[in-house]
Amino acid sequence: TFVPINQDAEKLAGEEHAWKEVKNAVNEVRYPKSKEEWEKVLARCRNLLSSYKGRLPDTNIYQLKMLDCAMDACINLESWEEALYYGNRTLEPY
Image (cartoon, rainbow, N blue to C red; front, side):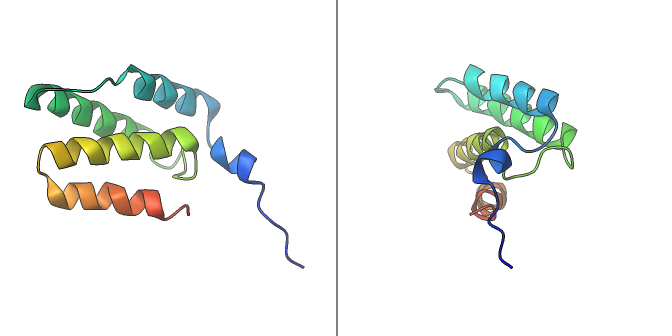
């Protein structure tokens, strides 16, 4: 028997304190204008993504937003391989 996954539950999967911190971090990111600002954004994304590895699935909406943010930072910093890595991670939940 096929049982559909509750997509709303998947959007907030993982440890609540983890996704709330990621949500706050994503909301703090504005539109960086300089290379230095993009580097800070990428460092913050990397830190949070590694801190919650295994505790926040890529299906979590805030984790997806963090991955998008990391990808955008990599694109702006011309770190193509890393941008591709984050981009591929955002595709998997779909």
